[in-house]
Image (cartoon, rainbow, N blue to C red; front, side, top):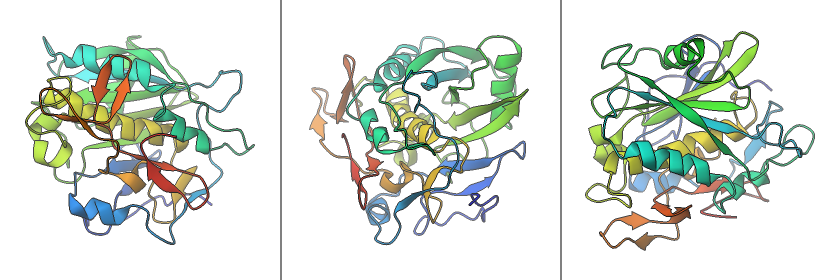
Length: 298
């Protein structure tokens, strides 16, 4: 079964955890992570009758020899000069693999029954100083340009996320979505790409810590949550035709904006996971075990 190629773009907060439309280059669904829906999000998880299903498409990170371990790349778009996000978010990417949180993805398999391995790498980053101005019109073009320049390697195992500074927007950001992932073709390679907006533009919609945060950077800490969401979806459903439920919700969508194991940082912010030496506040993910359920670790 092929995933729906087009779904109504109308955004119904009370009904949908994700929308899917054709990508900007017409080569794959864009899968959105909507803004924080508050109490509504609690009604969207663990929905009876909507288990996550496998539709036969490729899955990342399942080769026992590690040859398709996912590599997370960043393109820093806009002005990040002096921003501590440049330390916080690479550290996040370097340590999410091997964690009890990322281990949830091991409950997913490829078409041969091989489970996703609890492994991921940080592949590095590139910078784009406003090539499209302060309104990004094509995220895939930002990634393609970084590949064309040789700033990042062309990697079939890569997930390339464009991270925007707080002065940058794109159509629908903050009102209809906080982040999304998609894919496009580069030569013979299917490039997994995505957009992660800076929640400093809309803390009430795209962040849960809104006064203080674990690493004293509201934008970066909010982005850590959306990066986790998009990365785990890109691993288990990279082209939109692998793991999702009958409503199109991928694993992270089914647990969007719900959190467990919460503790309070000395500065009063909330956190619930530790990757490396840093704490973060990251939403739950869907455990594909039996009927399925949301969890913070596995």
